[in-house]
Image 1 (cartoon, rainbow, N blue to C red):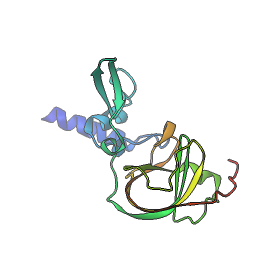
Image 2 (cartoon, rainbow, N blue to C red):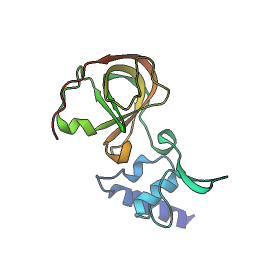
Image 3 (cartoon, one colour):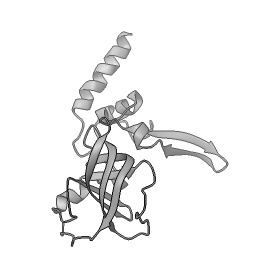
Image 4 (cartoon, rainbow, N blue to C red):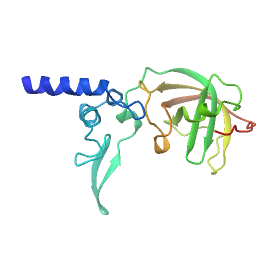
Length: 174
């Protein structure tokens, strides 16, 4: 029992020292993932957080368990704003009424639909801008979310309430 308490204390102390550029240990739901990140062992011999080993006809491989199972989130609430949906991109601008924003806002919040978006949503590889209202949950801690971990926060859409396409404003240069 004493060893378990000592390990837990070490994980908590190391979690407080997590690098701000990466997702902090406290953001993960499962103890093992928090321990991997807090101790700096993630990515090495012990694997990556939120991955599970799968065996099928193609062989053994690791697969991501999904955002909902991986990270901790705030309670669901109603949100609205602008959603910029692109090929390998998803940007949520809470409270915004147009897609005209400062460059740093373009990588802040990754919006991840839990269910398929309703019409007029398009997935054609082009950039589309939508006025959106939904019920969703925001990540409890800032970190590295979305495609290539380029977004600071993550919002999971549980239920779409309204979605309408709007004209895209010219994008600022970063």
